[in-house]
Length: 131
Image 1 (cartoon, one colour):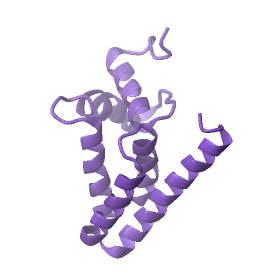
Image 2: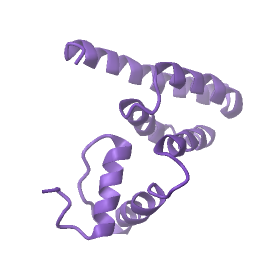
Image 3: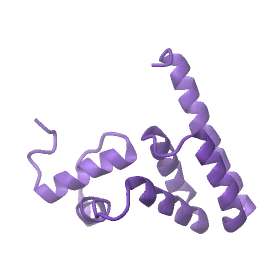
Image 4: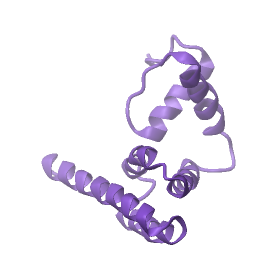
């Protein structure tokens, strides 16, 4: 049984997509903002045909870099890495590319997020014995 089976179809699809995109367990939330996020953004927009999740993630990372959304980048970059959408080399290349368009200070902050993400994954791999 799916933990979201007791929810309306739209909410279930949204929460399942949120878990897939973010890479961590989601629970249903309260309020209109959460409802619109789950029911529209994730159930509808993230599930539309035409772009892969990786494509959407790259667009979002670029937008966040350009608008200074570093708090959300701390969620999106590790999730992209954990989901296998972007590897070490690709993340580091994104930093170099975005630094030239979003500005060096933004690039430096993004680089910190990227290097922290890679370092945490390496530590976890060593702790887990590489499994």
